[in-house]
Every structure is written in C-alpha cells, then in structure tokens.
Image (cartoon, rainbow, N blue to C red; front, side, top):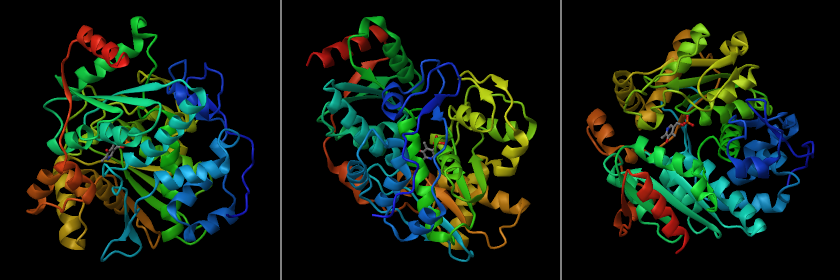
Length: 461
Ligand SMILES: *Cc1c(COP(=O)(O)O)cnc(C)c1O
C-alpha cells in the first residue's frame, strides 16, 4: 500500500439546512436525509496530498477508490475492510477512450457495471457498506425504492444477495423498457419487484406515503435514493482515476458531465475540494435548464413539470443535489427550491460552465461523434459531448486534457441510437444474460391501501 497521508480523524457531515447536528458516515448513511430535511455534506473536505495524487496514475480503480474514500470511513471501517469492499464493488473495467482526431480528449465509459449505467458505481459501494452496518446492528432492513428505470436496476443489483437486506422496487408498468425491466425482474432472492398500473409519479407517491405512514413504523423501511451521502462519495473516485491517467501530476483537467439530479457532477465538486486540479467543470443538461439559467441570472426557478427529453434519466426539473452545490458556494437553497441565501455566483461562474442541449442538438451530437470520430454514444453521453463542444466555443482547450463522461451503455438506448445512426449497438454480456432469464414480478394498482397490505404481507413472509 502507499503511505498514509490523510488526516486521520473521521469526517463529519452537516446538513445543508443547518438545523441538524453533524453526524459521522454511519448515521448519515442510515438516515438518508438529515432530520431538518437538508442534505448531508462534509463539514470539512479532507485533502489528498500532492504526493498521493502523483501516485494515483499507476493504481487500479479499486485501490484509488479506497484511498479517496478512506477519510470518510476512518474510525467506522478498518482500512483493510474498506479495501476489500472496494475490490468487491469495482470488479469491472473502467475504460478511458481517446477520441480519434482530437488531441487529449477522452470519453470515460462508466457503463461496464452489471446494469450498464454509472449508477452501479455508487449503488454497489453503498450496498456493501449498508450491508455491513445492518449485520453489525443485527437489525434487518427493507430498502424501498421507486424507479423510472436506471436507479431501480442499479439498486436491485447492488443489494442482491446482501444478507439482512430486502429490496422492493416499484416501477411504472408501461414506462420502463423491457430491457430495463429485465435487469430488475430476473434477480429474485432478496429482491422483489412490482409493476404499478400507473406512472412513475404514482410509484414515488406510494413510496413516500409508506415512509410517512405511522401504521408502518414497525417495519424497518429505508431508502437508497440518490440524496444519500453514501451514493455521492463513491462518485468522486472516477474523477481522480481519469485525471491520473490523462493529465500530468497537478495539471488541471476539463470534465463534462451530463447531469439530471446533479449527483454525478457533485462527485466532481467533491474531488475538486479534495485537491484534484480541475480547470472547469462543464455541467451539461437537457431541456430541463433550471441550472444554466440560475448561473446566468442568479434567480432560481425550477422547471415544473419536468420536460420530457431523449436523455430520460436527466428529466429533472429541480435537481435535489443543487442544494449541496449551493451550500459549497456559501448559499442556502432548501428542498422546495427556495433560495434563502445566494451563493458566491462569481466563484461559481469561474468554476462551472453550464449549457442546455435540446433533443435536436442531442441527436446531432450523437451523429457528429460517430461520423467524425467513430465515437459511439447514447443520448446522455451525447449531451455531455455537446456540452464540451459548447464550452470550447467560448474558451478553447489549448491543450488542456478533457474528459466527457458516458453514463450509460449505448445498448440501453437501441431505438434512439438506431434512429440517429442507422444501426443498433452490440449488447454487452450483462444485459444479454438478463434477457435470457425468466422474469418474476408482482402487479399492483396505484392504490395506497393495497400497497400497505402488500408491504405488511411481505414483512410477515
Ligand atoms: C441518473 C443518470 C444521469 C444523471 O445523473 P445525476 O447524478 O442525476 O445528475 C445521467 N445519465 C444516466 C444514464 C443516468 O442514469
């Protein structure tokens, strides 16, 4: 192992609403949201020493993960256990693809996990850590989650087989593709899926009511949703990994991140505060453009209802992690979207570049990437790609290395890719395997009383 140069006291976490006591990782992870409805953020950002940064390029991904995450688990998880956990969670490739015809421009493919989206990175780490806490406490837990596609499959896969934890996933019957559905419904074991006769909003409403229902207080329900700090920290790791491989030590990098709920881009902000040199962070959104408007005007107005775009995992009108970003820059945005204190906008504009990419530009970017560079993307990655091009139009890279994040495998969006490029992408083995397995799932009406009975019956099984 490399020398240890972190300050070795455990990091504590404060709430963005400022009305809850600071806690360590275990409590933050188990609670999800802070009691004042704010989101947890490190009180102080632990910094990686320059010598540590310089050592990263030669290290494999799981080792970088353990080094970046160690300050947060210090005192909670022995270092050797953290290393074993990371090795187990990150047992797949993390390709960094040079873009043909472009100097020092790369695509980071975060799509080689079991459900072929970047959400595997966070979900797999969180599942293992939560599984450990549950075993230590001896109190089993049921993770209840509603999904429109990617989150449900990543969470279900990540917790599949984790002792002491059951998973119940609700999905809208007619709104998930067969491929997305199969990634959840072939699992069985401790994972149970239910198709709801309704929309995603109905699924989410059922889950929210269950969490708030006094009649279900005795059930050990928990959520693994994206505002949990355990889903955020692991997303800082791949920025260190990529920078170590494309840049010289201490050389700044430009990252372009296709963004919806802003968890992924917050991983970059975290890495930056931990000492990773970044020249500019490009926050690329689809037509849900609340953030680029805010950055330009200083006025925040969420998009309600959210706009339906091709990059459907980014159809978020009010990104929940924006509260964290605003807090990092000294402001206060609450969960409802009210700005109580403005952040340092000048500093934000120096650090971040944000752009909105329409569906028409998304399709054009998919085509441009393929025809000019033989770079195969899907709609989310195409938004990130166009984001970098938009940034370059205002400020040339001039040799600065740039990395665009591809957040899903193109085979998850066969129709969109076929319409733009005229062919369907090859299906990766993880997805191909799921397509062969028999499915099992329940069917539910979007009716709360029936759902409550369903939860009770499941608990008593
Ligand atoms: C969830 C998701 C995103 C958006 O990530 P955020 O952290 O919510 O900004 C982008 N692309 C894909 C494929 C996703 O599944």
